[in-house]
Length: 330
Image 1 (cartoon, rainbow, N blue to C red):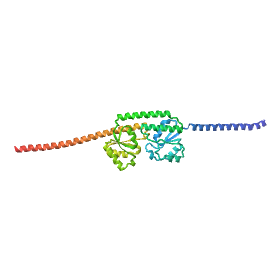
Image 2: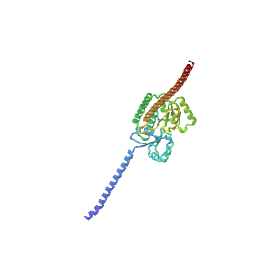
Image 3: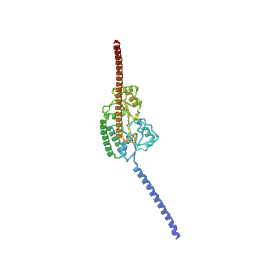
Image 4: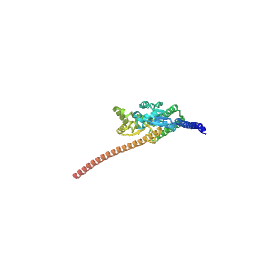
């Protein structure tokens, strides 16, 4: 009996060791399986330099990827000041999208050590045709670099842009945009021309406008009777307000970037919002013009009244003199 015990003890220890080993192997296997599953299910991260590119990417990928944006929509991306968190964003990125006007992208790429492909999406984006081109280029970048199929979503986006173009044309006609003389900031020219306005003077970034250029803007705007001065929010609005004050027009500031307000999720919404701001400004300008006309008429009536009073006074004096003279002769 004792001998059997001695012989059975090692066997029991072996079995226990085997069971423990199997448990450890199963645990490790499950952990590895879980980690592998997590990495396989991990959504790719698309980092975009601006809210324009971020809105396009979100429209195209939906929930199949994470989209992050670097620059605030309130700031011109060329003048954006990078933050430490931007380095981390670049480090985590699987794809980086930029316009090509952001001098800080290379700095962030080097600082983060990112190996993610950096794709440039150049050109304008604030007219329907230009915006369609941006969607097509971003879709190509996503499919080629992340392997995501976004064709169906791209088709829907292109249709939505075409619908927006038709809406804007009809809106411009209803609100009589065609031919209205305006002064326009350079970054809004394409959109303003699309709506049918007549640009009689334009200006670039305010910090680059010289005194001579300013005088030329005022001269052309005054001669053409410009009634609106159209600013670009991200470039600053002080110059536009100054021009409007000098020519007697109305200043209106438009945005070239989504997410300036919560409801502006993409550029089609931005275009509609901008068109509404223009309609409001035009109404204000027309009202201002009517008030000015009424003031001029009132001044004319005042002058006529003063002349009439003067004539009446003279007539009274003359008549009084004649009557007095006639009485004396009698």
